[in-house]
Image (cartoon, rainbow over all chains, first blue to last red; front, side, top):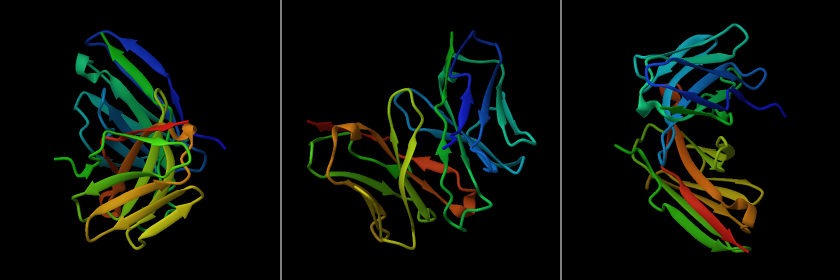
Length: 117
Length: 113
């Protein structure tokens, strides 16, 4: 079965540079979530989109922005990169339209490992 | 404030025996709970879930138990296999809060042959 696709898988940037991470959800999924996982940490929610509209916002720095496009793929744009942005960035997708009122299972992509030097 | 807690950073069991991974939560608004398995350099893989209206859900070798009054859930793996060795994350969501997942810090399970 098709899974969540993330690109690139690895990214090396210098401080103050910008980066764009892409996420392609499972076909027919309408919701995308972004999570950041620092070394030895649990994944932390950044932001989510449902039907191309921002659904929720977590601990996402103002230097980061994201959007979901008409084909449901999403991009996370990161500017003025800092050393502390080095982490694994996961995208997850779900079908909110098909979920019950309390059950919505998120399926994760393989992640993008960002290293800021 | 860690709303989902996995107090055992690691667990080691023998192949064929039962693995029990525990998770506690503090937010009474959580109504859906999931377990994910994660290998290094890969994304979390969904294993099994349970909604707050149930106290047990079973899928093959995996069973999740939910004790709402104790705000506790556990994942049982029977029988354990070496391929089950991975980090297991407990996660919870609140449907009224747009379903974002709150994760525990994970438990590293090692199944010895």
